[in-house]
Length: 149
Image (tube, rainbow, N blue to C red; front, side, top):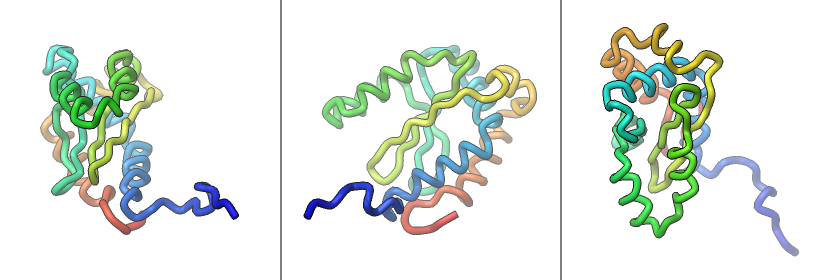
């Protein structure tokens, strides 16, 4: 008898962090859009994108185009499609963040109800505080392993 990969719908413990990231993004889309837009302005739209590194605890990192290309080479070109989405993103309308955890990557991509610039006008008056607040929330929300929401 053949088993289907859909027989067990529950996420495996090593992949539950993906669900945690989804919950976090869903709850904080405007703030994340504000943060990415504000950082793009600081980085002068040089192609660097916002990343989330989950280890040792969730924190934001810049991901330069060179770092993304190096990562793609190290994984044998397996994130080429992700790089295509990143390169095709319109930062005035869309938010893209690359999340790295447990030796895996997850692309976060969304269009907030308001434009990223409008989100920035609402939430971006102090980027350092916004980063600190969101990292604190991530530390409580996103966990590697078997924790559940």
